[in-house]
Length: 251
Image (cartoon, rainbow, N blue to C red; front, side, top):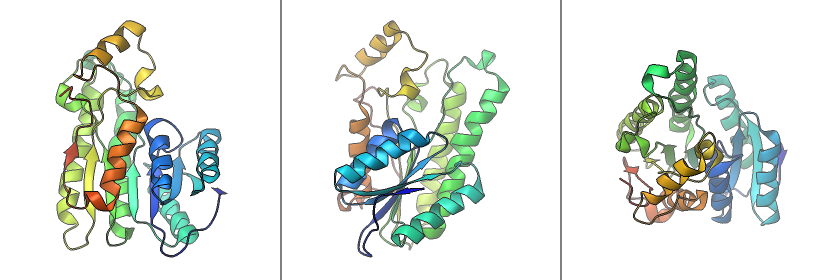
């Protein structure tokens, strides 16, 4: 665990899973800029998570990095324990951790399918379960779906199936949190320039996908972090039980 500083009792606290790279990293930095003390969760990339914590500290924010497998209930419970012992509680959980291995359904290796299900479905369930038990009133749970679910792109059947499960959990949990003053939403990015999206794609494929939205570009991690910031803040309190498709108008 790496710590920058301790928060005051009035500081809001956010856990960001998958916070060492890509959208999760940009989200962690944005929430820190919004005044949150941020717990940056990572699965294995200590170096990248430390860089995120360092960057937040250099910008005047507060952050620690905690390793946890999001699909392991014991490790996720310890992640929340660390957030509570360091900062006094948890107000926002952004579950950005996920894995994606595109392939046509007929060619998808079942071990790959199981890995995506474990991280994307079980991981969401485990993280949301702890969030539902521990978040303070006025908090927010923000899951990550994907616009590939609405686009029905060939090659994404296994991944889209996991995100369909995420959306179902999100909408139901929002209703189960009645009376707690906690919102539950999902963000569904379109094609976004992250390693998760770019890996394995040639330049022609990337250019074709970038041309599809009316805005004619790929999304940037900052675009998605702005949406998360809105849902985590006071301006987004009346948005609940929704899937926000942040994709430049592609679908």
